[in-house]
Amino acid sequence: MKYDRIRTGFFESRPNRFIARVELDGKTEVCHVKNTGRCRELLLPGAFVYLQEADKPERKTRYDLVAVRHQDGRIVNIDSQIPNKVVGEWLRKGLLFSREARVYPERRFGSSRFDFYVEDEKRRAFLEVKGVTLDEGGVARFPDAPTERGVRHMRELIDCLEAGYEAYLIFVVQMKGIHEVQANWVRQPEFGQVLAQIAQRGVKVLAFDCQVTPEEIFLDQELPVNFERYEE
Image (cartoon, rainbow, N blue to C red; front, side, top):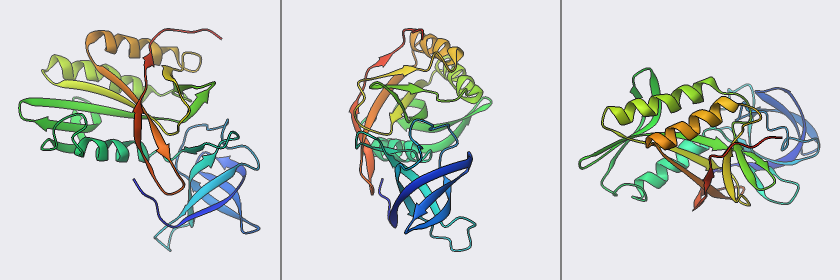
């Protein structure tokens, strides 16, 4: 996935989850934040950020805040639309199914709309994708804020299995420098419990980190998923 029209600036503040104030060319610009999560460990005053200039001049905000440079120099993509895009590119390359597989985004099953449905000869699969931006000491944790929708989707992946489909949950870690993925047991214990349950029932839980530059992001290395509960 490639970006164009990238600008850089310095984060100032986030009045609400949808917008941020960013210093750009010496002036404060109100930008759209393409992530409704907290991102508190990333969006710190003075942080170096990457903005994409919108291609619709009639928009209220001219820029989207899409990535942040971590204090250790890594670039962390926080665009919540990116995980589905990079997984879609990855699927169409034949890296999970064949190159001839038919990949359909946003397909409904039961009361949930899953991110992808794939048909490949006799194989039929539903896939749910979760973008991860929270890094705690080299462990990527999801979610950074409770998500009832995420829990419901995981439970309905079991329904997909019981109906004869394959079922996948894919964590897309939008950065490098991570050694494993784990549920955020502190923020939402229920998510961790259901994640472990669906893995035991046969849902394939995968995780990948990403190569990230200011203009590009793509899936890179597979990461282990740790289902064990931890306490803090």
